Amino acid sequence: MFFEAARLEEIVPGGLKAVEAGGKEIVLCNYEGKIFALNRRCGHTNAPLDMGTLEGYILTCPMHHVQFDITTGEALSVPVPRDPGNEVIPERILKHFQYIAMLMSHIRICEIRSYPVKIDGDSIKVDVEEDSSCV
Amino acid sequence: MNPESRKRALRYLFQKVIDPLGYKFSPDEELVDFLLEQEVKLEQKHGITYCPCQGITKKREDNMKIVCPCIPFHRKHYDAMKRCWCGLYVHKDVTNPDELRQIPFDEIKRG
Image (cartoon, rainbow over all chains, first blue to last red; front, side, top):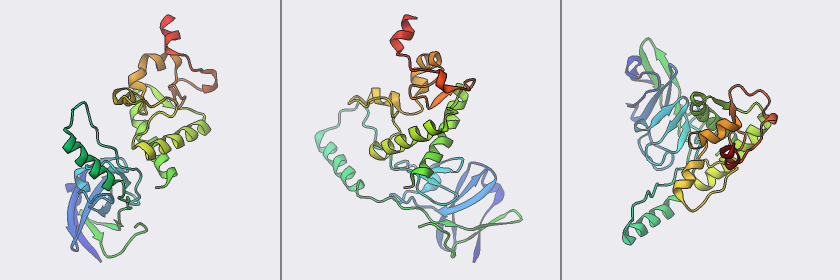
């Protein structure tokens, strides 16, 4: 069943928009005028993908920079390691970071669910009930 | 993670960086595919697409200068060779990459 999610003029080409449709959190992506709908949450650590960046068909998560193909939801990369910079980090905090890094190394990156989109006039409609090929 | 999808994505992303710098992917498709595959492996190991033809050190500052496409950090060197160190990228006017060779930067500086 298609739910109205947004209006076409709300997302410029290259833009992202978080919406809720049928009780699900969705991110809408405008790739060269074509709209794609994906689960809003990153398949790595659940960060909101609408706060990331869209470069062509590649959506980059704002948290650990894992990349996804918006046309399929496929995960395209691993997380980028944290930049330690030149800052001297106190040992207590360093140990905490190491612990977090150890935990993160066990996180599996999942593909994100993509949803069928229909354009009806200037309205973007998303079918949140039907699963597409991913996940 | 599918290495073929990642290779395609790297090609797409790198193209946007190298084009304004006057470079293109080498016409040697086999070489390009091989080098991108090595970068995908390095990325899976380190999280960063390091140059597959240059050594990673313990110094982060130096390592950042060999993140592909590393052309901006070695501009003078690569412009003189008309290719990057690996040969993944060549000047836009290059049609036969086999004619180009690796030249150590010291040799270029000496003229």
